[in-house]
Length: 81
Image 1 (cartoon, helix red, strand yellow):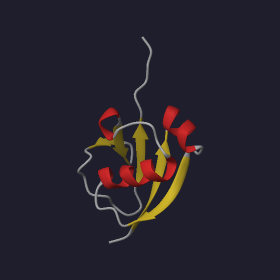
Image 2 (cartoon, rainbow, N blue to C red; image 1 turned 30 degrees about the vertical axis):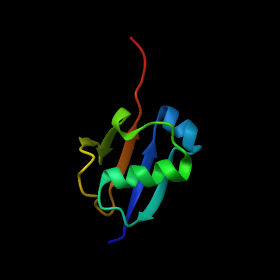
Image 3 (cartoon, rainbow, N blue to C red; image 1 turned 60 degrees about the vertical axis):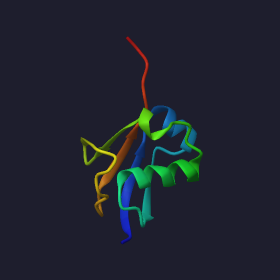
Image 4 (spheres, rainbow, N blue to C red; image 1 turned 135 degrees about the horizontal axis):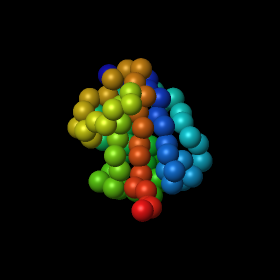
């Protein structure tokens, strides 16, 4: 089943992708599959296990189902004190 979602990229992911956000029409069933697709399209430098994912403003699990119309944010590790 194809769904359309908005994907947000933050910090180093935004730099690697060259965009802060995009709308994607995809057949992916899970957030993990969505990231795999984005990683392939944009040559994103982080493995999934290094990131957090949020859906519609709340942290989510990588195996969670992708829902049409959602906003998905991929959040890379950050440094700082």
